[in-house]
Amino acid sequence: MLKKIAVFLGLAVWLVLLVFVWLLWQDYHYTRQTVDSVRPADKAVILSTKAYENGRLNPCLVARVHAGVELYQAGKVKTLVMSGGINRDHQYGSRNMQAIAEKMGVPSSAILQEDQSVNTFENIVFSRPKIEDSQNVVIVSAGFHLPRARRMAEKQWSQNIQLYAAPHCSEPNGGYAYSITREIGAIIKNGLKGHY
Image (tube, rainbow, N blue to C red):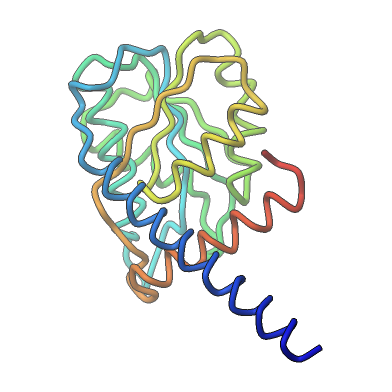
């Protein structure tokens, strides 16, 4: 019996390591993508993360907004959908993202807010009404987060989906390994909930 448990645990650890390496590769792949490689789309849905870290804007949130604004300024999208309700820091992600985008020159008329979601699955579900009139949509997030977001969006949306990553970033207090490990847990949890 102990031998079976040891084999099972060994396989589980091996599987987690494989997923960890796969996420590293996904992050590397998506963060190397250029704005020129993105086909024109109607809207970009920017997925929120924690807005503030240690009393300052989270650089990972800022990086995601910068990536979305880059698409807008390059003429790749006409509208930015800021998706994020009250996060772990008790701040509205969408409102903070809109403020950042407006400071970068995006007019408020080109920004829509989805401010009810508290996780990636809800980002996708609650953004659906904001993109119903669109044929092509770009999801913007961290590179390691994009595969999971895409899987959920493919189940919930009928639009053609492209992905665009923010520059490499990890949560300031957790580090990159923490962010990847947390993503593995989220992949498993959402799979068990049938979100893919």
